Length: 298
Ligand SMILES: Nc1ncnc2c1ncn2[C@@H]1O[C@H](COP(=O)(O)OP(=O)(O)OP(=O)(O)O)[C@@H](O)[C@H]1O
Image 1: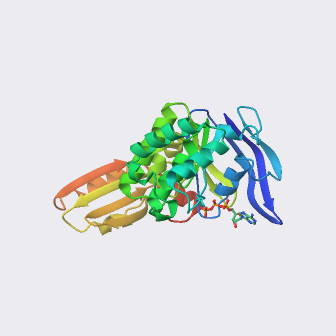
Image 2: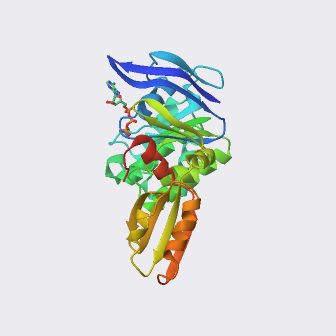
Image 3: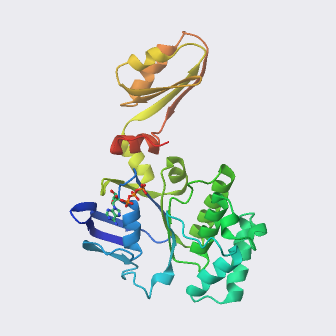
């Protein structure tokens, strides 16, 4: 278990993280969400022991993370930090040896990961000659090469194309299945929905929502109704109980304050024309995020 207990971080008079409490179960993928400046990276740096909390304590399996235990942890920083002039092989050997790994094990691991990421051809290429997405894959490999128990990934999917996002998601799930505890931040709610069982939404340094994704959705109350039809549906937004609406290319998505409103919507479209779709949906994490934090993520 990763335990964050009453943690606060001040920079001068500014409080970047305030009274944060988190219990992250071993072997899970945990999502830390929040708008820009919410305090996610600061929290990660405190977990890693790179910043000292102004108050409170953080423990991995009941022990503080120190220089001696830092080999148990892997970190993909938001500001990527590879040496541009080294080749991928030299880079990973260097970083692996800093972790006390032997050269042949590093080479074996490197080749396995490069194969997995369809990136074998970059082994002897300089890091600076790689595209941003490929550099990110190398940075990810650098974070996991030593098989850490706890893996911290700050925005691991940013800048990756959809194919590489899938490759990385697959790798993250595989590491989870091997027992790694993974904490990651992302602005992409669909990635969080897909990967995490538990999450925390931070806003201005504080936790404004945390728990199991399924329970957070259930307790949110509001649901969505998605309708597609061959006639104009915008009049549905005026029906009492509709909280919000969004017109889509071929229909409308309505946020409703309680399930019964769906029946009223259904009545309102009957005999108006051909209906292609009428579906009552769970709220999305994006809906919940926007309500808690009040901003929209692209
Ligand atoms: N060393 C520092 N000195 C002063 N303020 C800092 C420092 N590090 C972070 N902050 C401030 O703390 C707040 C939280 O920053 P942090 O980087 O943790 O946010 P974040 O949630 O990771 O944001 P993003 O999504 O943009 O990466 C910001 O207002 C930031 O400017």
